Amino acid sequence: MRRIIRPLFLVACSALGLCALALAQGKPDLTGWEKGSAYDKFYDAREPDTIKGRVDDIIDITPLPGMAKGLGLLVRDKKDGKVETVHMGPKDFVDLSRIGLRKGDAVKVYGVWATIGDKDVLMATKVKKDDDQELKVRRSKDGMPWWSMSPEELAKEKMGE
Image (cartoon, rainbow, N blue to C red; front, top):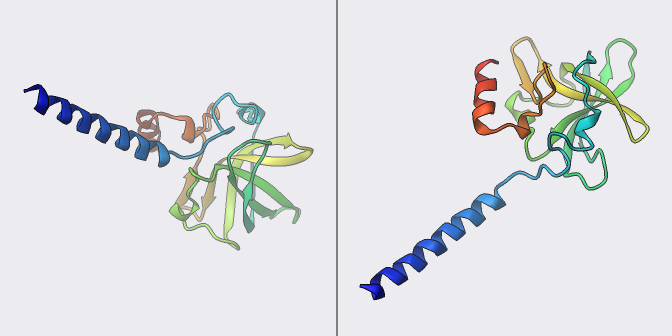
């Protein structure tokens, strides 16, 4: 009996180990983007603002040294024509294709202003394209990043969209 159980146990443990490894490799890189991180502390939910304009470019960003790559937008402000940098979030999390966002699209970006590395940036809460398409990346009320939420919290937020 031991001759049968022991090999089965070893096979089961190996299978579980491989599954855990596969899950870990598929996990998004959120290094430096976590709730409470140095970067996150720049976000002050008490200071909301919005800009309207056109997307000049979609860019990769690394807001602070050591952070995982992020996704940003260069938005030409409709008011003054100035190109503003918008930080959307970690590249492994933010999916702009969900709303089909491309260069040239008219957008309204909600967020808060922060000075990071001597540059003023808008840390996005959401970006709205057209009247019916928007991509949220943080909760408006407290700035909690969606990438830091548990699956249960995220499901609850999405139900309230």
